[in-house]
Length: 172
Image 1 (spheres, rainbow, N blue to C red):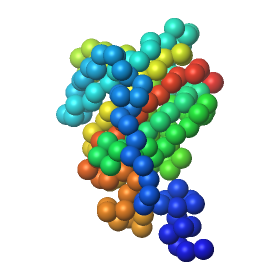
Image 2: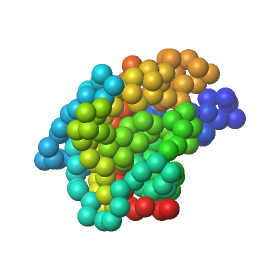
Image 3: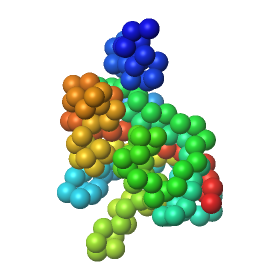
Image 4: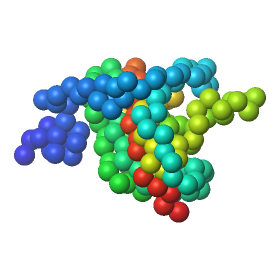
């Protein structure tokens, strides 16, 4: 087995992948796209479906979600999890949660320093798409960079990230 085939089997291969459609195109047709400023950067989102379940995700809670994360620049879906449970206050550098800061924002929402709700928290049953710029999504470092090389990343350092999330429920 060659080194490149090993990397490909481990999900680190960079050749022969098919570009994926924008998550807005796939899930958000007809939904209103909104934007707000977060730490000086513009974030876009749309609620594909507003949840009607009880509760909202908060720190120290666990949530059940289905997620898809996609690099905008290289049109590559790089992470997808179905019915996955994790704590809301996860560490963003955790390799198992590649959707990063976009997933956290999409779930918990965002209220500015003046108390204005710019992005409401999701409720169970909700579906949302959020686009975070590279500085917010992965701190401009890229995601899944092979041996730390900027030219061999699942998501390049200059790429925004699209995250689709379905909040299935509050786990704990």
